[in-house]
Amino acid sequence: MRVLVAMSGGVDSAVAAARLVAAGHEVTGVHLALSRNPASYRSGARGCCSLEDSHDARRVADKLDIPFYVWDLAGEFHEAVVEDFVAEYRAGRTPNPCLRCNERIKFAAVLDRGIALGFDAVATGHYADLRRHADGAVTLHRAADQAKDQSYVLGMLTQRQLARCLFPLFDVEKPVVRDEARALGFGVARKPDSHDICFIADGDTQGFLARHLDDAPGDIVDASGAVLGRHRGTHRYTVGQRKGLDLRVPAPSGEPRYVLSIEPATRTVVVGGRDELAVTRLRAIRATWTGEPVVGPWRGQAQYRAHGTPHVATIEAVDGGVVVALDEPASGVAPGQTVVVYEGDRVVGSAVIAEASR
Image 1: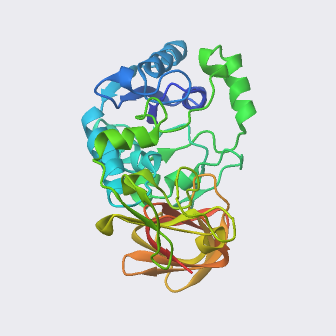
Image 2: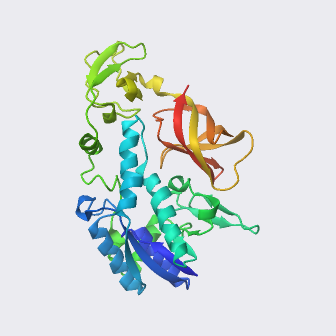
Image 3: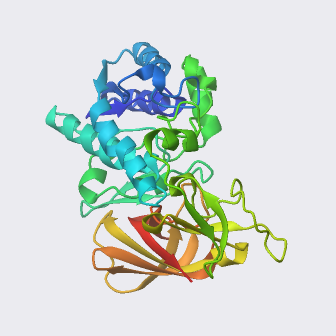
């Protein structure tokens, strides 16, 4: 099988490529250049898109004696991920740029290019389990290593895309991956995992947004509308935030206040007590399904953060979206986040949260 491996420069994609070579596949490595100025993206071991990372990926490809290319997807990445990130914060929502990158770059642009070039499949170093069935269907499941499971950030993949994907690390835990890399002589064996947002080089999300969005001062209010303070712009806040509110009026109870909602149209940030963050109903839009959507209400689990706790819920596909009724309240759920729904360990689909309510 001709397989195109997306090589980030980290240990996971390096071992994924090595496993495919060992299995006898015809493997080609590709690194995605996502910045018009590679030096502006996170360097060192914390990112996945820097110039240093591309060199690490090339050294692994050389050791494996496989062809290796760098694809310039900077324009596509900036439009689909960076501009989307800024626009979502402008609208008062909290996006997940890594999930958006998977959706629009790694498993759209790369997969389409790979198929056009005659590759049979695209592989990555994600920790997730693909199961192929006798009827030709492919289902996506949580990985064996629950601590590293990345099925959440793959929840937007369709059946067509899953049929062309390979995740060689589905059955292995991270320490074993590092052992395999060390045995193969890969310099990335000890490279720390990537974290944070690759296009925010210093890790300062608020500073990045301040450079891209103009301040629009407004009021910070409680649920009754009483003004408690002022802010410089709603893009500086996310639902669940506690620090940096700079309120002039303390809560009568003395307890800390949290951001409950963000209303850019009125330039208002609403705050309240921790108990007011609790929600039990999510309405999400733009649903995608890994297979056929389940008809009618069904019992499953809903997860709204990459490594968050799954919540038992009743789930129903409605008008191109999803309605999720949680059995127990959840906190810190923000519009713009993605909710991924599971049946057991199987990913059923995903949607973007538009509204969270009690």
